[in-house]
Image 1 (tube, rainbow, N blue to C red):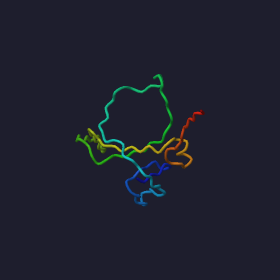
Image 2: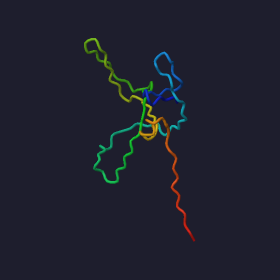
Image 3: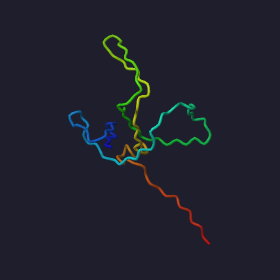
Image 4: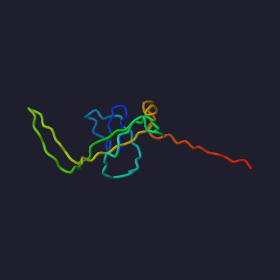
Length: 115
């Protein structure tokens, strides 16, 4: 995958520079899941044990969906699609991404036991 955190885009391969998509950086990715997501509950700040770390996530639409219909409103067309595929890429902690450090920081918490 190629990403540009400053211009907020993600692409499968290094994109055509005629559209202003220059300066992208290649990153290694690992697909975690390909599933249908359903709403189970609303997330609130009042939940116990809630941990929040701001992260930068970029996404793009996949070329798959489960159909839908088009609506014309004046001179504009609107598409209502069901099951639109999306691809999300977590670039890491938001502050680090703003400083140009893409990716997760590796930290090791080690405990030693003295005998």
